Length: 62
Image 1 (tube, one colour):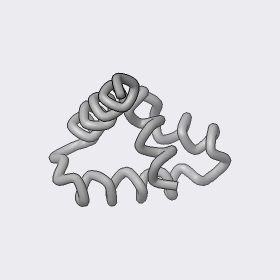
Image 2: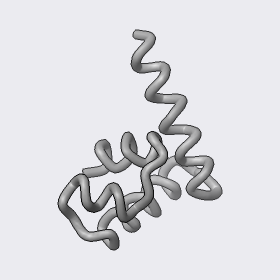
Image 3: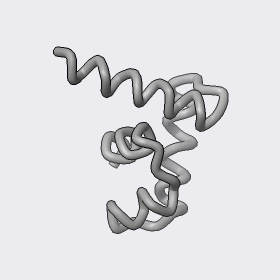
C-alpha cells in the first residue's frame, strides 16, 4: 500500500484522489502519508511530494 500511495502523492494527487484510485478510505491514505513522512523524516507533505517526485525521476533514468 505504501508504494502506490507514495507514487501517487508524488504525482501531486490529494489524499481523496489517491483513495479513490486505490479503492481505500481517505483515512488509510492519510495514515500511510503520515507514516511515510515520519519514516523519511519529511517535515510536511510538500517535502514528501518532492522526495517522491525526485525518486520517480531517478528511477526513470535508470
